[in-house]
Each structure stands twice: as structure tokens, then as C-alpha cells.
Length: 435
Ligand code: NAP
Figure 1: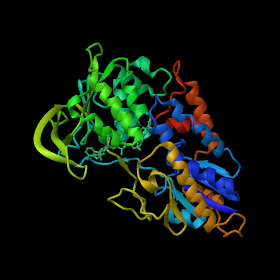
Figure 2: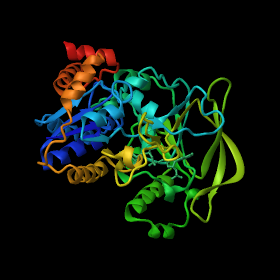
Figure 3: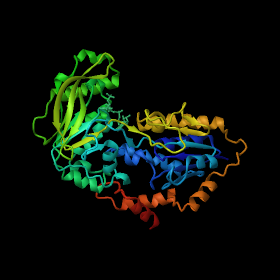
Figure 4: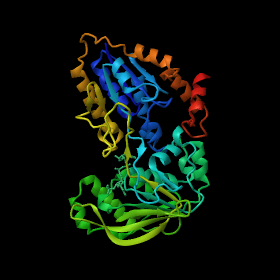
């Protein structure tokens, strides 16, 4: 029997487990530092995108397959070390994602009111680390930095009315705070232009259908329409949509605007003890397609600044880490002897949920060739060894059956029309497990 530990129970972890099950002869432990499974599905995917979250049903099947265990509330680096996992398991797969915000690295980026998207998204999605975030919503101006889908998520969540959250699983603290939000002017800053956005069509389209907010795009930001032909088809459609927004400016019937400020690079955040404005430099595209400052500077009022400029993975003691890349250096998923990375921990924070599937399958194949199913056992202890160690350390793992109790409690507590009311604090999650 092959013993495999997967660290991280998000999409990359579960797709890897699913792939390993196909070749069989594997005992698979999926560890997570939180007492709940599904990682990015629970804490990253927007609460109003329930159809994307439905993929958790597929992961549930994997978790309930004989030979697979979920062990939540087990923290690699605190409860167990990477060396210990390598001692007990034939292969260790890091599926730890990229949960840390990249810093803007400009003066004032540490002022109160400047929030990274991992924190803001974690707050409205009930991540225990961000339950007390309290973003400043009692003022009119929010600036969102970045032109990717996370920036769109943040803008849309800030712009929605309570009625537009029906059917979502936005947590109560965020639902209430957003319901009384005074934010009116949402500006999305892109350091490059409309043809360089990292946003996708479906997500952009949602901005055109909001009840109380309208998108505002400056027609002068576009190069001649003929140049769109050089874009790939998906990007071309997104740019066409933006051109449509530019052609139909808000008519004033909606109280909120989501303004796209292209060719706009933040150079500082200023304020008296808290964020009050973003200092922006106008850019132009250089011959390499990158943004170049033009020296033209202006200020945008901003009591709330959300930087959506990408994520990095957490360094883990005993695991090589590339500071510049913000992840574990690896060759096709192999970090070192018997240690692998999948998903965002492997390739950085790019792609959709589905991108993790081939990634997990590729690493499962590598494990299959290093440890062929049916080969004589290595003699490593696997689950028994880990269980013994965790018991010695007083670590209290949450198993999948425990999670199902937590889930039942969350479903039972859902407000009308919502699929669940997430418990947002670890002690409350553990209490629900013990009931
Ligand atoms: P992303 O797609 O990589 O976008 C990051 C954005 O930040 C880019 O526009 C980038 O501009 C900008 N940026 C980076 N550094 C900057 C800086 N120092 N100053 C100003 N701007 C800066 O990242 P993301 O939005 O975090 O999304 C991560 C992944 O999750 C993506 O693959 C995304 O599609 C996916 N996602 C998907 C969905 C969905 O499908 N519904 C929702 C959320 C996220 P440059 O292009 O100029 O570098």
C-alpha cells in the first residue's frame, strides 16, 4: 500500500487525490490547517457564484472513498513538520495554494484602510483569519487596484444590494456591513489598458447587470477598434464588452458607479493615520507592452483601498522557497525527493478551478511512476504514524464525518434563501463538530 499525504484540501489537493485513486493501491491523507475542507472553493470563490462552488460535491465523493481521510485542524509547520510527513509517507504533495497577499510595495500601503484581496475576500467568505477585518465602509470612496477577476469580485461585492445576495452564502457579518455601506464611488485601477485586462467576459458582464451600480469606462482609453482583431477571441469579446460600457455611460439612475481607470499606476497611499487618497501616476504602454510612468500625477479619494494584485504561497520550514516567485521551486511539480507541489503552490495564482485538474493528474502520474501501484510496501507507517504523533502532541484533527456535522449545523443556521451560514471562528467550528 502506498502512503500519500496531501497538504491542503482545496481543488488542487482533491484533484490529486482523485487522480491517485484511479491508479489505486493508495492510502491518502488530506491535511488542512483549518477545520473545514475545500480551501479556495469555500474561502476564495465569491459567495454569489454558487454554481462554481457546486464542484465541492465532487470533492466530497473523493473524501468519502475508502482509503481517503480528511484531517482538518492540522497545521503543517506547527502540528507536524515536513520532515515528519516525509518520514511517515511515501510521497508528500503540497496543495497549500497561495493564500498570502502580495504587497503593493508603495509608501502608505500599510495604512489602516488598505486591505489585500485575500483579507477582503476572506472577510466576506468567512475565513477565520479575517473575521474581525471590519473594512471601512462608512465613507464613499473605494479604490481597487488590479485588473484581474479578483478585482471584479471585490468591486461587485462592494456594489451589490442586500437583495442581490439572495441565494449566496455571504457570511452574516459581511452581509450586514455591506447592507449599510456608504461606499458609492468604486474605482478599479489598471496599470495597463483595456486590451491588457486579466478579467474574463462572464465576470465583466456581471457589472452591467447590477441593481444599484453602473460601470463607467472612458472611451478615450481605447486604441482604434481595428486593433482588437489581434487579440485572442476571449480577450476580444471582453474588450468589446468594455467598449460597450464606454458607449453607454451611467445615466445617474443608479447610486453607485464602478469606474475603470486605465493606464493608472498607484505610487503612494496617503492619509492622516488612515487611507484617504491614492496617489496615481498616469502610464503609457512601452514597446514591451508594460506600463511606463508618464510623470502625470493625480490623487483619488479612497477611504478603502483593496489591492488585488496576486498572491503568494507561505514559506514552510524544511521546504525550499523562492521569495521572488512566492512559491516552492519545482520541476514539473517535483520539489525534491518524494515531495511534490500542485495547483497554485506549484505554478502560482493563475487559471480557473478546472486548471488544477490536469495539474493534479500530472503529479499523480509522477507519483505512480516513482511508487508504482502494487509494488512492495516501503514499510512507512502512513496514517498510523501520523495519528500517533498527533495524539502525542494533543492535536485534535477534524475528520470528514466531523466536517459533515459542522456542515449540517451551517445548513441549519442558513438565513432564508441562503445555502448555509458559515461558522467563522475555529472554536465555533470545533463546537459544532462536538455537538
Ligand atoms: P491576476 O488575474 O493575475 O490579475 C492581477 C492584476 O493585478 C493584473 O491586472 C496585474 O496587472 C495587476 N497588478 C499586479 N501587480 C500590480 C501592481 N504592483 N500594481 C498595479 N497592478 C498590479 O490575479 P487575480 O485577479 O488575483 O486572480 C487570480 C486567479 O484567479 C486568476 O487566474 C483569475 O482569473 C482567477 N479568478 C477567477 C475567478 C472567476 O473565474 N470567477 C474569480 C477570481 C479569480 P498586469 O497585467 O499589468 O501585471
